[in-house]
Image 1 (cartoon, rainbow over the protein chains, first blue to last red):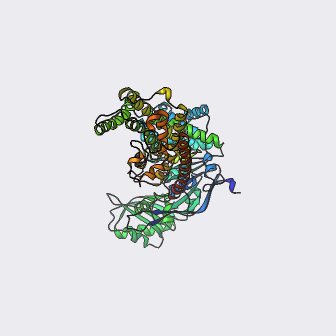
Image 2 (cartoon, each protein chain N blue to C red; image 1 turned 120 degrees about the vertical axis):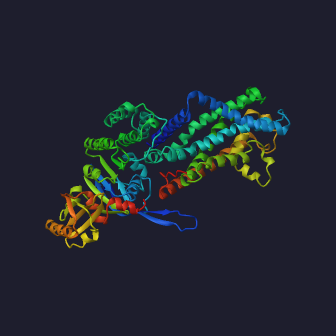
Image 3 (cartoon, rainbow over the protein chains, first blue to last red; image 1 turned 90 degrees about the vertical axis):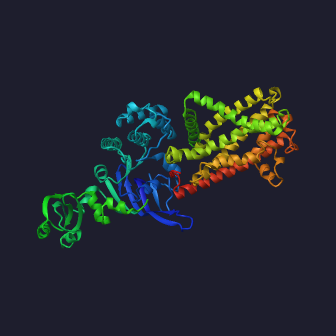
Length: 338
Length: 284
């Protein structure tokens, strides 16, 4: 049965021993804790979480770069720790936000060299390189030394490197990190086109961009502090919150209205107050829509004027807040250290 | 399958190493650097020798030192050529993790990366020896050179140095702060204990065993014997051993150190994987 999964993990754990100063005792950082995941073949699976959540650690374990400290993981039906040599021909990986590659080599040479390490016949490799560079809009830069590329183009080159070997399972670690909006759109389209071309291809993508996860992924696992908190389709995850009515309200002035005042209302399950130049933006989660009347009544008592009121559909960000208790940005500020 | 993986790893690594080694500057500057660097190194030694010996270049000691120093270029070039690939790929190009997840044989890949340094090292050795013959009266009678011994010794020695480089590459994988100096430090230590620029008899008696345990000692001795047999015979260190005996000792020690190197690399590789060091960039 296991072989039918592209990726499978069972109680996977990873603890780092951190070195401090010489006098200090070694600290332990739990990067992954009892991670149980299954990814079907042909699936585009997303790992969504703040920086330091454990996403990269999980990818490092799955790509044979890092040994787990507990549990096991299989990729393409093979144990990544026991059989790394058999796993490697079936996988590839791209990490975003870094400028890797041999600057002295041209784009074509860089890509060709990696294709040769995977045993792709040279002629076929050159054809694939040309086609893939065309798809990402870089064909005219094929003979440019990679040291002369901008960061974004270098990242695109790396993305091509990952796809070039036609892996069974591809790992993309924050592939759009640091790219401009146009390049992000190109990359996302490229990913979807690549998956469409072969139903057996599987892709695991990590991101902390909610929109990216929503747009691309068949299923998403929300991960924080090394634990998988939820795993389902983006729609199903959001539907789980549908019982609450979500409102965005712009008010002016705030007149001392606090988050606690809002939470003290029995029907308000969650409230966030973000101060603006003119007043504040409130995000409210209400047990039912009718509870809004009591909130408005509170505003009237406090002489807070409503400037704008919008009812909105829940997003993955709301799912994250619901699971963790604070937004992904707030979670990153508190820092969990990967 | 395994053979093709190993050959692919070696061939592509050698190609990559050569492109990096030969393309860091324009061809003219590269050629000038390739000539000037070894000659400058030899010139420093010659000047020092000239001052100490009062300008007497006709003793057997001068070709002993000169040839030892010339061939010692291989030690630094091949050993650090292999181990430096770890630093280069991990810290500079940030590609080591991609090499590690590729279906290649990593030790063979690293050995392949040393090929370029072997080639540039060979150019430096040839230039140094040629300069010695033309300008410094280093007397090599090519008609009397034992070419078979020379070639066998050179090949065994280079393989031995490459395997020692693998040992250093393993250690480099596991350290961060001093990874850039490991190759240089080891090459420097071997310089003293291998009889490169002075016979081992010069060392205090209690330090000599270190030299006797180093395969590089026998390697340099055999290279000298194959090129200038009479000069090598003038020094007592290994005078009681025949060429064949020294070759046997060198091969035995090379197998011993080669086995240890492979074992150490595998251990370090496992350690690096357990600690998450394969893709670590330190910014040191």
